[in-house]
Figure (tube, helix red, strand yellow):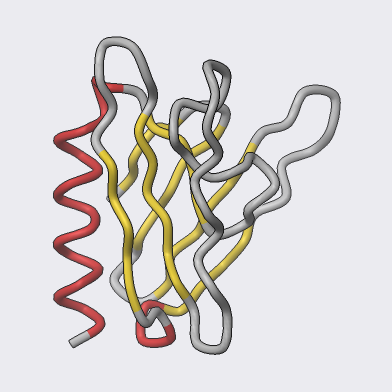
Length: 106
């Protein structure tokens, strides 16, 4: 299951979550997270004006806070390795992904 985000993708194969961000000028550096290690998920749907995001919370770490302002639109920083911004057109796929991951966690 894949979700196309803004400058990256989130993939889930049933056990591992892979977040691949594609920064300009550098090779993609995927971050792999085992679904059983995730303690929580945060999802904010994208709107016509602002991108939303999907974020995974791991044990012993705090979720990166939402940045305010016109450029960020209430989402975590791009540097947060456990989140990815999503456009409005990916809302449905992101909701399904979060539901499947929540089910795999439990």
